[in-house]
Image 1 (tube, one colour):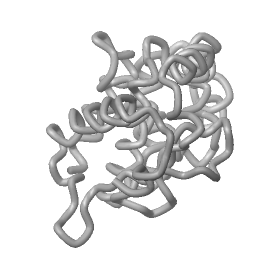
Image 2 (cartoon, one colour):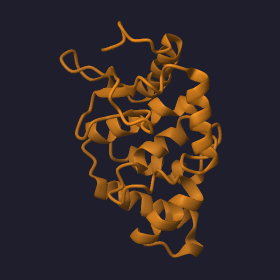
Image 3 (cartoon, one colour):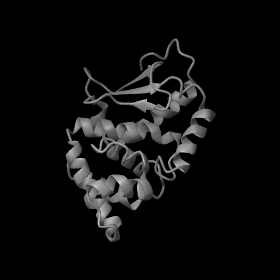
Length: 191
């Protein structure tokens, strides 16, 4: 953990966040990293207000948390819940899904899975879930994600948020979306 010592973040919320990530690490121990490059959490005072956390492009071991978002658990829960109700995040997820979402980014980076591969998997799975929609890459992003899964998953047409929203749903919901179940089944074949 870096940047926490002199911060006024909610330490209990940070512990809860790390425990949530630990659930993923128990399933995917390779994401713990090595002695030289182990998984780390950093705190940043400089992230955009609408960004709860992030993993840098090509980074496979550091999750950066937005200090402004992690100062007050009730406010974080409320802000996340607003976005979930608007279908920006997967239905049924909560602020506790944030580290699981970021672990999806780490998984993709660690296993060197291209965005193109993620999009191919997503399209196959979405076609199984909604065969009546006759989906292609364009409608996957413009229609399926916004109405049937998560607006955030479709927010970047390079597919960079798909795996993360799947992780968020699959590892947070008692009954994950059918799309998430199919996607994780295919993703496990790439390990």
